[in-house]
Image 1 (cartoon, rainbow, N blue to C red):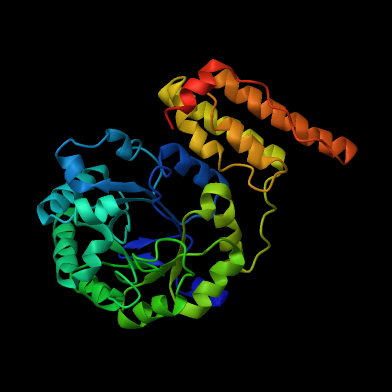
Image 2: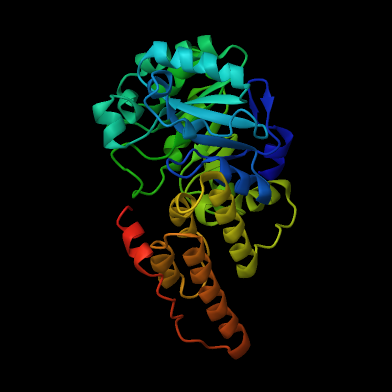
Length: 360
């Protein structure tokens, strides 16, 4: 299977990816600094921003931080848009062409109630393949030479699986690839990914299909490709805790040994660099508070990680952040020298932490 992937590189229209392994847009996480972390570990063929409301951007209703760094960061880089108004998508795509982004992706799979209900967008549009086609066509019209792709789910619910019709409509209106999350909107994230459903979409269209859902390792990526016949895979939540998973998958596809995972010390060093970059960009305490959600994803396989996460999620400034990390490092060092260690007693981070935790 690996040789088939290598013999058929993943092309998104004119864009050729070095690896058919993509990093998903994850709301609240895939900001510029997180994207830099992914690039540092390597192995990822294409990175996306968080999804951006086309109308919110055009009308000035969303924070410009959603597009922070897009103009000058390394390529390839994809921007994901959502909306249900063709004019908004056309204009947003036109503006993105000025940024020279690599890909514009359209989100037709978000199951969040706010997106589906209040805005009538995201996975709600899976009920209407014709409208999906119109939105794709409008985006293609605005995008110029930038390839346009679409991300979908299998349908609104298990008894309403519309993915093949939606994918055909997107293809007919200019989409150059489709990413399929192997769950329905009603499934949320709790159901097992339906690989057969993804395979049906692969068989229904002639453009590349990228499989998404339950890809947590090289083994699961290979299994997904074998079962679905997809041209590539997209990794989402796993990458928040194991951002080196991309290089592991890419090595497996190439039939080469996977690089060893970073040690716990390497991960702590990365954590501190990430925090430092946050503070440099946003100042302190804002950078520290923004970093808390990322810090809670680090060190997933370390002893005492639950206690570490509970404490790091309440810190309010750089001194408190470093104090928690230092206490955790000391606890791990104790295990290394004695073979056993009591759970670490993290230092009281004071009233600032208690106050900052109320803002979560």
